[in-house]
Image (cartoon, rainbow, N blue to C red; front, top):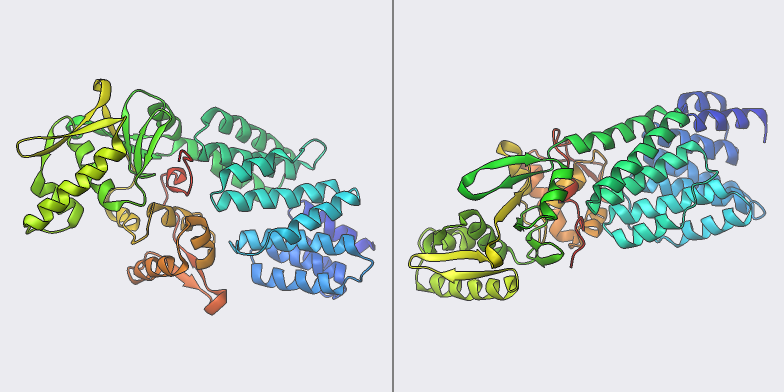
Length: 419
């Protein structure tokens, strides 16, 4: 390794992409191409970074398997930043094994961290936790220790394990300070700030409501109330979970009954909410009886749904209180959550609001929806100037302005894996 390559590597390790480019910008040999690609990635020029890394990988000879493995890891991280999540994880796993075999344990850990972060973005939390547990952070550079702790904190937040998340973020903060990489310090600071932002609204009897932070949401869900969770779309009491994300009519009825508790709600209002009609007839009343019967079967064990003179009422077992946990948005931004997606519609907005550019295929993977369904939702949002696209055809990516002032943790896919 010549002196310029060594100096550029040190600059990149410290987060100084411009300093690295000054040393290798005019060189086209494979090591310089690889470093240029990493520098461009740090500057946010991801397509150019990917092109340079692929050129570098092709330029290394058959006897330079270690260098090629490093390029595979770097390109995988660029793909993660681009939210290109559709590729096979096998090349990255093979690169991690190749790096371990050559005692490059830090780069191997980096590869496994990328794989865990990809699973986290896709909402595959159990797999992400297993992948993260295999990474031994002892002896790693402080920057990797910070990334590992940051990923562990994100996983704990998605599971609403607040104490574990706080502990992991404290470790991430300490490691980021030791690494002295400004971008990493900013990322950890942003994650810590999520604890202080509203994560949901709590609606109780009489129409009273208040904003909840993540730790307060965790306390509410662990309490004795029957919770109609409008963030994850389901009914919850303790460990019991009744998902309604794929049953929009039943969810609309359940929410209307929960918001009316302890009183009842008339049939005409329920029909208008569930079937979106202002002129109900006998067919709508018959359909309402069928849907209420289905909701009774789903809610069995948690609550009864009783008929009253004018409609229906929700009656939790053992006299429990009913609480509605609603998304934190009111007013103009609330329309972003009204998307024509199957399942948790707010998840699309939450994913787009991370400030990264997502492809439709990556959004479909993360949401568990079809790509065409996601495309229709994005087209509707684009028509309202709520999101914007960059690029065209296969290079097209979607962005939305970050929804400032609250955290979207509860709206993300598989945030409460209780099925």
